[in-house]
Length: 357
Image 1 (tube, rainbow, N blue to C red):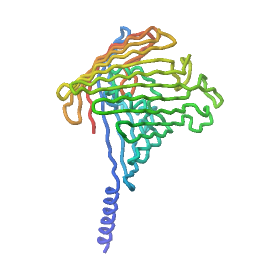
Image 2 (tube, helix red, strand yellow):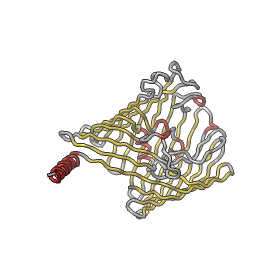
Image 3 (cartoon, rainbow, N blue to C red):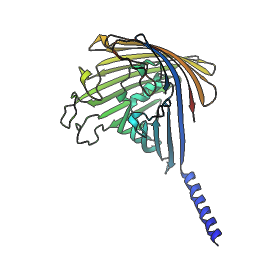
Image 4 (cartoon, rainbow, N blue to C red):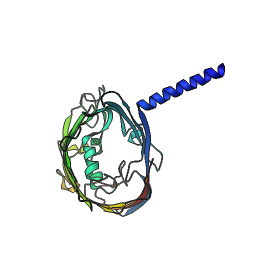
């Protein structure tokens, strides 16, 4: 009798498990990207291991549950980590890369939590990787890429047009910060047909001119405009991106979310070679208040897949900094070799491996 009861419980549990599997799904995934970098900064050489050069080292959970009429609950939790040290990125947050839940249907997808801004999506697409060696990766102001306490909407594609919109509450009701500090909004409009695509983005983000933040500190708003285009000729793909930032005059002494008024652009050519590809990047940064803060970036990156899940890569990059510029060779998830002092140029090379699971 006892054995029959146990069997009954197991059968019942199995039934519930099957029902749960039929209703929804959860996927564990991840990437490990580790490389070795050699860099010369102002005559000083450094050799070190690196993480996240071509693809961010990360692991995560994603899933969905069907509801009704083509609508599903969707979610994603993603952790970023340094594969060289095993430490968490994003200031140690468990799921600092993405953490959201939402709804998906024929009307689009709505996500609430930790989301990427519309600008981040545009840079990823039009720089064809947004990784080690890309000028935009070296010049971008990272607080505009990911937003906490945010809502993100992705529209369906209609006659080639689509839209992404985000809104984030930076302070999120904090009693120790200005009420609007860190608030941001971004929107992307994209048109794509055949091998051609083009996007126009706009983003606002609130910062403060105060060096020490309090609830009564004053605030100001910075405005980003991004324009991008790409065409795939099959034998090669050409992409370009141009960013303008306004609203940050004299922002060098400002706090988090502050930027200086600037323009930068990048031109990318990606050449497929059998199953591998070779990427060339060139870009320039212009500090509108101080030309000594200008910089130029050159990069070449080669990626070769040795299996469906594993890539080998190698790259060379050079950044020529003006006397007041401090740009370095950023990866997809972290800053590169420290400059030490403004005006030092960076010449670096890397080789590495990426495995996805």
